[in-house]
Length: 141
Image (cartoon, rainbow, N blue to C red):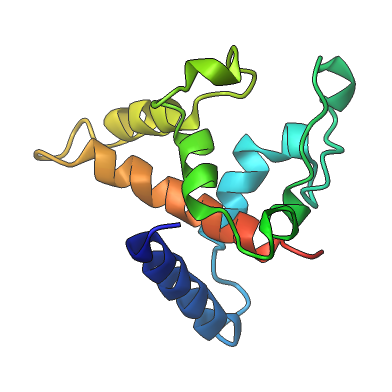
C-alpha cells in the first residue's frame, strides 16, 4: 500500500473513531454503501454468506479477513481497485463482481444533473472511500 493510501485510510479511520462517540443517529455512509451494494453477496457481516451466495459460481470472499490474509495489513489499494473496477486486469479472468466505480459515477451524474458543473469522479471516489473504510471496520469480526 502506498504512503498516500495509508495516510488516507488512517485519516478516515481516525475520523470514524472520533465520530463514534458522537450522536448515534448520524448516518454511517460506509455502512449505507455496503448494505446497498455489497451485503446481498458478502452478507451483512461481511462473511461471504449473503442471500445470493447460492446463485454464484465462485465462492464469495470473507471480507472480515482481508487484513489477516495480507499479513495483518489491510490491502487498501487492492480493495479500491476491486470496487472501482475500471482498471480490470485481464489475468484475473472475467468480472464476477459489479463494477461499482462505474455505477457510482452514473448515479452521481444523475443526482447532480441539475446543479452547476460538478466532479462526478470525486463523488464516486467519496462513496468508494466510505465503503472501504466500512470494510476496514469489518476486519477481525
